[in-house]
Image 1 (tube, rainbow, N blue to C red):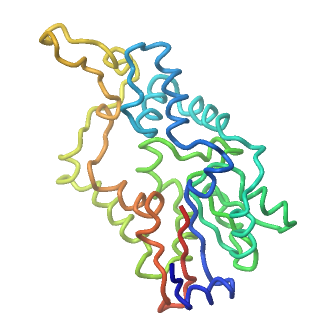
Image 2 (cartoon, one colour):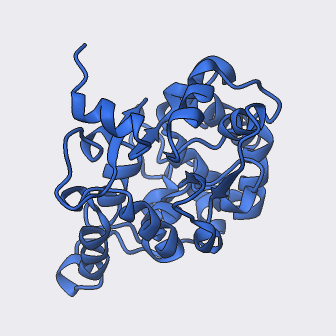
Image 3 (spheres, one colour):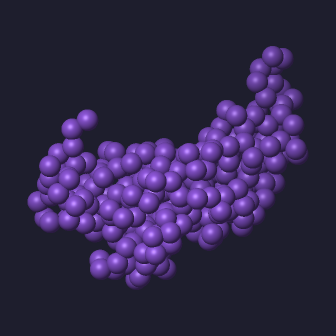
Length: 279
């Protein structure tokens, strides 16, 4: 693997930004999103024996968990599943030494443990209220999907992702400041949110209102008029939400879930830091 000299210089001069995904924590944590999905799914399955959580994504299961319980119960359960006593890996230690700016989607506390291990002062920004603490002269850890030690900051459901531009506007601006102009998602994301309000787009939505009681009734029932042998109508809760098909969510996820699409190597024209992506 050949690393461009410009990138090496940017890292050496502390002018690079690290985008870190779940892969950097896998060895220390020992599990990923599928395990968390399964733990939530098994809780739902106790009340609904036919519930097939294995065929759903973590986001789907979180949506359904909220529909059957509430948001606070979900985030408390998610936070309880995130280990808070694991030792950081060499990759975490190397990262906090080399980068003043780290942007991560991980909920774990391994970067924080790495900072403490090397006695490095740092700032954690995991929700919008933290944005004023951002400081170019200090180490900044931007946990854009929240942090396991602050359950209310966790981003997990469809509503969390689709409302991100409003609920995390200031934090999103801090991330945008670290990106080269051509990769900044803010304008595109806000334009997409405006498009969501347009009648032409709204008409294409599945616009049934969420009804938690209805979800409970429909989740695993088999309709009386259903032909023998047909699959049960599981009443997927996401299909009971006002969910745009393509307008809002993909722009932010393009950054937060597929950072390699946004954090490319090379010199920047406007002096913004280089970006480095680690899975």
